[in-house]
Length: 146
Image 1: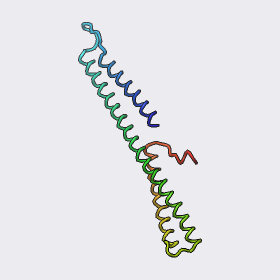
Image 2: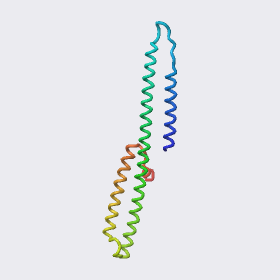
Image 3: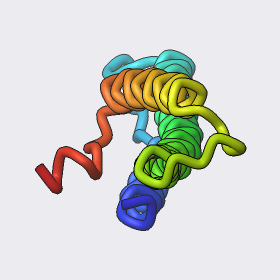
Image 4: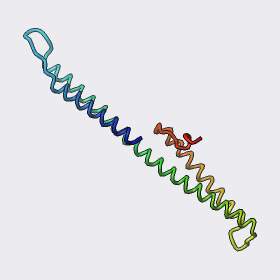
């Protein structure tokens, strides 16, 4: 997806650069007593060029922000995967200790509390993940699987 975005951005920038060059290089013939004032035409094209540059800068800024959000989203998804793995491991431990009755290990209540805390952390990260997706307009990998 990032490759597609950068390709689009490159084409957009190239198009704007060509348009700016076309505007700057455009010359008009002036006939006496008829036509536009050359200074007015030049000022108009300077204003158009300035506006195009502002739009270009804003588009680049938005793409940079989108990429930063995509990176942050990847970090959150990795945290969710790790926490999910921890929950699965602890759940197995709880079952094992519960079935084997090992009193020297963490109690069932201790493990249940840890699992509960981890599940809350995962829900928090999922909520943050969803908020980032909504802000960035990106698709959630989990949505694709479901």
